[in-house]
Image (tube, rainbow, N blue to C red):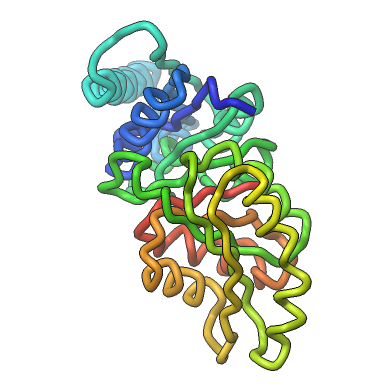
Length: 276
């Protein structure tokens, strides 16, 4: 699958600006089109006070929200380098996460910043983990201050052999830069290392078939949280991209919220490619 259409969830927050910069960089490499989407609901303060608002006050609050959205649109075009062919922007009203999920289904990949919810701006904040779980598309999630995809030439793939990690592997071969070095990582007990190596030869072989330099690494559990172990491994080997499934129930998560997925998305200093 060649990447030809990229959806960027943009709300003006620092991580979403990084997501846009990375998407524009990736689009230039792959000759792809970029669509920015501002998905938003109604401000919580306005919706909760609706029964008591006069029509004049409701109109005034609506105009204020429209001004905020217009400013976000201006920030998008400024960060994207101005209006030009191959780049577009849409403003969609609705649940921010649900709207991004719906849009994502007809794009090759979604790029979005990690979850940043400022007080009073909750209606502008889509949840990337939910987008990964529900959209059926790979989601590339960026921290602030990540401007391009060049560091992805060295990557870590979190692997447990289940559906979500298999989906992440399948998506990764289309997203990784050509010739990237990928370390396939599993977490387990040291005495089981040989069994792990036998069981995980296939993802290494698949990556090599696609022209990537791949190796297997087992991380001893040692009572560390798995999210912490994955991020530490990325730092130790100098990885610029972490690839993993969006896990609901597997050895890589206790649960979605508060588990490995949430820990990685909150703390990762590098982009995370997530699939389900």
